[in-house]
Image (cartoon, rainbow, N blue to C red; front, side):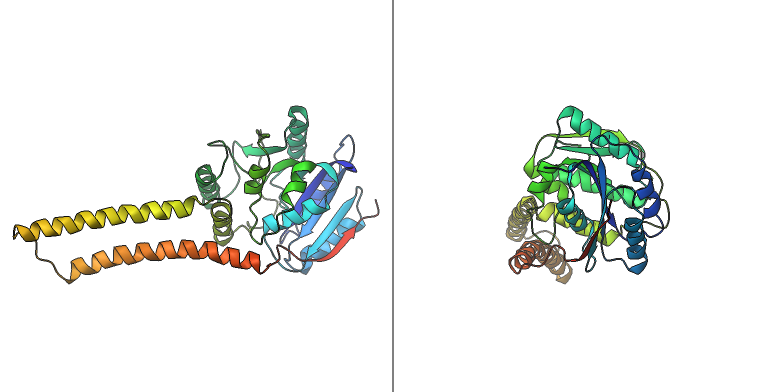
Length: 311
């Protein structure tokens, strides 16, 4: 049985300067049934670890700190937190103050009132950089195509989930989890409400282009075969064009007309076909590589230490 009404799960990555204010604000909330905080330090160095340990020591509500042995990524850290959460519902928060805890309470209240398994927060105005906003927009447009979700439905990392759904999702042990894809495989009781998005409390965003690309690959390759089908259709389309071009060359040869053939035309055609083949092989290789890592049981995360407050 859940011990709390609500758990706040917060992955930590270079957040020594910002996490204190976030935790203090959560501690000041009044939640009927009680609430707890689960901090997952995702291998970002000693300053963040020290700050988190001090928060556990001075906790006014139950706090659990989980230390990853190295950096595994946000989605892996969230799953680690869900495994330790003891609430009937769980809310994910950023560690930089951009997701106000009061708005997290609104997500939880909406989930309870409507009987939903998942409630996403969407933003009327996002306080991210332009490239990060574009990355989020692009990810959502592509997941419209690759995942079984309502078209245009915004998937955000600011979400509230029921303990039932969280327990189904944490059974996934693959090294490249994509939480929204897992959620959509488990339930269709999902909703969304508009929430505020604040400016970062301190420092620059740690969500780099490399991390966004890894997220895109996890979304499209781990939970859909549509990229393979697209590669097949692209190959068929190019084959049709090639057959048509061959027919055109034969017609020109028969009528002894048309431009002279030469090295440039041959190389251009070769580059088109060989480039397409390499793209297809790379896509197939990505699928095979991920299966190889899963078969060899690459860990999703490794917990070095777990600390609970005495509250």
